[in-house]
Image (cartoon, rainbow over all chains, first blue to last red; front, side, top):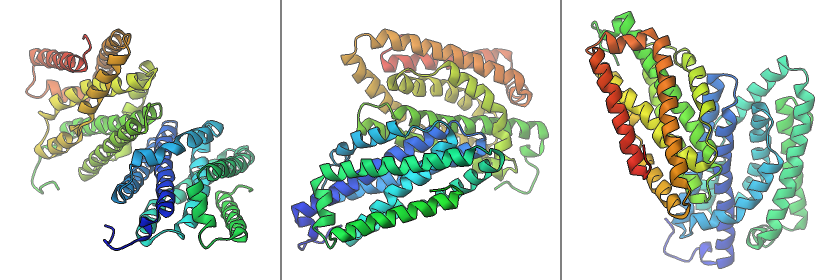
Length: 225
Length: 225
């Protein structure tokens, strides 16, 4: 619940930015849920299929939390997500996995980049919004599971390492280019970053950190960034 | 928890039947979850997409309950599901929806037939197993939602009624033929029915009831059975 006193959410520019941020994150979780469940269908065993469907369920739970926060601040959740339908659809069309293992790498690497960005943004928002975002950004073991499965796969498939490294680099490129076009179009969101404590060199640093963490994820998978 | 005294589960033939029944139902829920999430991707609005992904999540929760019951009676859940991977995969290959609305009709009509069959079987099992099955068989509003969406769609798409009626009849045929081939292969499962209180005429009645309920579902959708 918001306090009855004046809050940052009374500032329309700030509120629009938070609605955008929660909206993009909510729609991201919803599509991540659907992608994970879809890709699980091609998993080679019932165990992996069930695990992947379970992670999809976790993403849906996160989606529900974000929708609840949007409603708590008086926003229409569906309207908040709408601007991000096309960008996500474009990203997914351009990065359609050709196998379940590419799907898993995409879930880890692609969602990882997006989540790093949301984590950076979370430092500019009010505490209650940040608390919901932090919960929604917890992967609850999915990353560890994916790292294990991808490393196991590369033990028996010698061509996988090169192919998946290339795939990871393509995911970085597509994610950054899609992210940038969203930022350009969504003034409020960009304003949160630029109008806040961040100056241009900090934005540069942020992108540096995101790329750094991408390289760490690739290394954990045993892939070259 | 089982009591420490002698229970029906000490009878190996009965236990094998229950493991089969919980295994087929668990794998059915897992694949239903994956199908619903996959089909939701083509939904025409964020609202319907989110609803469908939510129903997928419910199905996953049911799957988890059934796995917990399998483990409680000392069965290996993955092994229990394994015999049903191919039959389900064959059924889904033969009934691949060409649109999200066909996917919804399949979820209501196809899963409805399967669930009627499981409900019939539930009357032959011990109370604790039956309680878990009853929970897992509750659709938690998915049916009402699907009926509403299908009826709305038919208002604006005049060719939908004929096409979806045909689709519903095909689903009945494929479900019965796949169900029969599972029953023939799984002796324990068939034994539960035939060795139990059911004689042959009762089995005939059961199929009559399943077909009757199928017709009721088709009528609710506004389709001809």
